[in-house]
Image 1 (cartoon, rainbow, N blue to C red):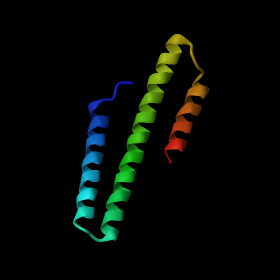
Image 2: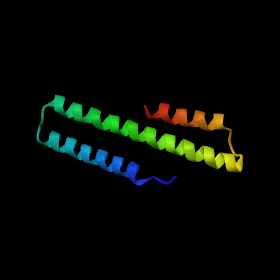
Image 3: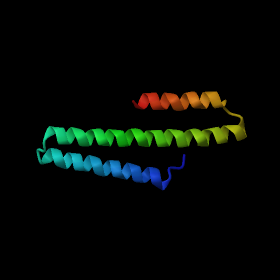
Image 4: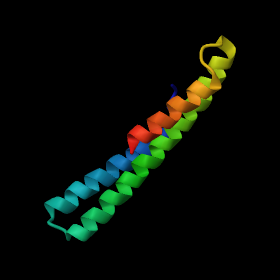
Length: 87
């Protein structure tokens, strides 16, 4: 799979969020603030997973159409399973 710049930038933002959270912990910030930031990072990760799975699904469907590998139903089931496992 080719990860475009948009997906890579999402991952870099998440990395920045996590570094910020570690800094907050080192500075003994209020737990409510830390949890809020952790929740935001988790949401960003979930959305990134969704983008990757949906992009991968489109790519796999296009590839399968040309090569006759798997049915669209199988590919959709795999994508849904990936999303479920990520939760």
